[in-house]
Length: 98
Image 1 (tube, rainbow, N blue to C red):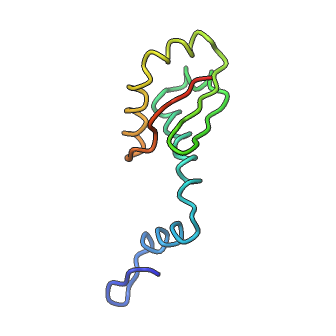
Image 2 (cartoon, rainbow, N blue to C red):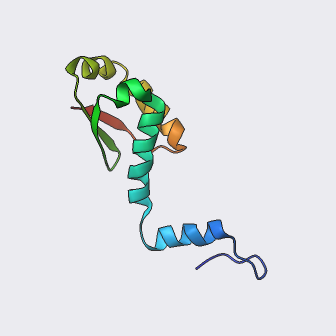
Image 3 (cartoon, rainbow, N blue to C red):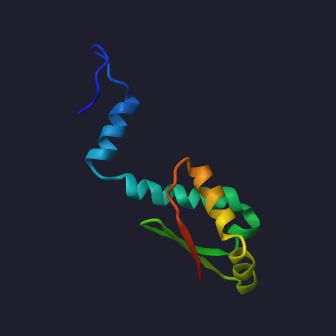
């Protein structure tokens, strides 16, 4: 289960093993993406965001403003780069704005 260093096991190793053995990483990634969206995009855009859903490597973003949706569609690649950078791993490959 956990890696042992002498007779000691670090809490981080125990948590990592627990997450892996119970296959919780996908759920944690979904929460992390929502937090990263609000952090990267700021309050102005977050106020118009009505839903975020991560399925595999596609982020579905539901927006209440069609004008904002059109503006964000021009910068999809930059948004993907900024979100992946905030997450610390390549989790998102494409964004679909609705």
